[in-house]
Length: 119
Image 1 (cartoon, helix red, strand yellow):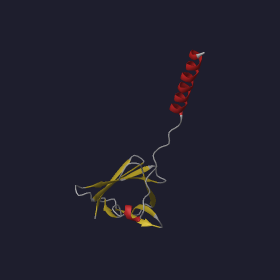
Image 2 (tube, helix red, strand yellow; image 1 turned 135 degrees about the horizontal axis):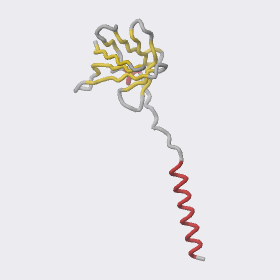
Image 3 (tube, rainbow, N blue to C red; image 1 turned 45 degrees about the vertical axis):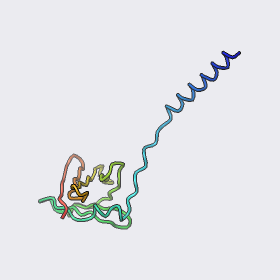
Image 4 (cartoon, rainbow, N blue to C red; image 1 turned 180 degrees about the horizontal axis):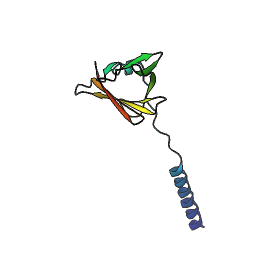
């Protein structure tokens, strides 16, 4: 009787362990970006010939625009200083210097890379 009870308890723990291990995991929440958090990214970036990249705060959103090419919303990702370019399946990576000041942006969109130094 005791061995049957022990077998049932062990079986129950194994079943619970397998069910827990197979439960889908949710990705970590993406941090929100407010006007204060976005402040470091805002400004103009010189691409050296392709026009300026302008990053601005409009109606509660970070907007990135390549002059003459249109604009798109930039949303934070789980990686610090990397924002997703909504609608273009690309990223905007903001590069900082030793003093943690943003000095450059690197856009990667549809296989193209465009870099700009902050003005």
